[in-house]
Image (cartoon, rainbow, N blue to C red):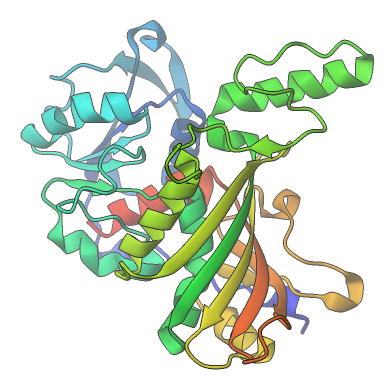
Length: 351
């Protein structure tokens, strides 16, 4: 068996303990909303009712689910009556406006925006890492940043065996992280570039085809870090319950439609060999080891797209650290699935 065949399953739904739930998806017409529908269907989430909510301009649109066509309803403060779980993926402003109304109506909110992630009273959850934090919710549970999830899942089982002391993270983030409009812009720009008539960028700040650039979030003049980098640093510390963990991050947008990739340099408390790390990762949930040096086959966003598992490989010693405590690795994960929708549905399964 090659390392590429080692494929521990993503955390499965505890189906025997699930009762039918009334679920609302807020932002149902977006890229993550579509992925939420896909996850609910593929994981056979027990639904008593499914409501699709979006902006008034999308009201009346029909979205397929199972054998039905479900109409989109306008998002309003009184749209949550009878809802058990509300899966939000409509941006921070809408989450701040409507999540309290959903909680007041009796729903538990799983929010995919950054609105509540760093609130000390809101659990920030990756089920493979800190599912126990779900029990402490007060009506809202936050879904972490996609890059923090994709980096955190492979780091956590290593951290459990040999505590991590420092992380250097470089992300290669796809268009899907900026939504369906950015994905379309990449397609249009690529076609235009090849035809000699590239359109001007609308969603991204720079030409996207055959290009890469610093992540398109605001840079803090005091630190020099952009907002995405700050999110990754702060959120990993909160998820790992390690407020003093030393982390630096560089986040880059690359011309890939879907799935983020991340280069990680990790320093442990004690020496750690690549073979030991590979063995730990091979049996950890939510991961698939792709580490075939003989064929130069390592994690790629193309192979990670559409997959629940995060791909991890390119494990090697960092020879710049003579202590033997540092390793380098490369991971790739579907931003729309484990980086967003799948993680939210896994949280819902455990509620």
